[in-house]
Amino acid sequence: MKKIGILYGFEASFQAFVDRVNSKKIKDIVAESVTIDVLQQADPTEYGNS
Image (cartoon, rainbow, N blue to C red):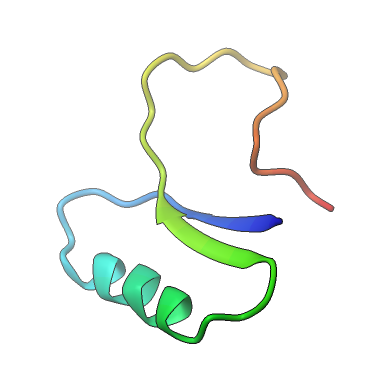
């Protein structure tokens, strides 16, 4: 499954984009808001470039 990670601040409109992508129910694609807890440079994440 491929994930679209959306990183944003206080803007409410980006959640609408996440909801819109997910409402299309595209096979093997899901969008979600990104939450940053600890950031370490060059560590792999679940949001890849593939």
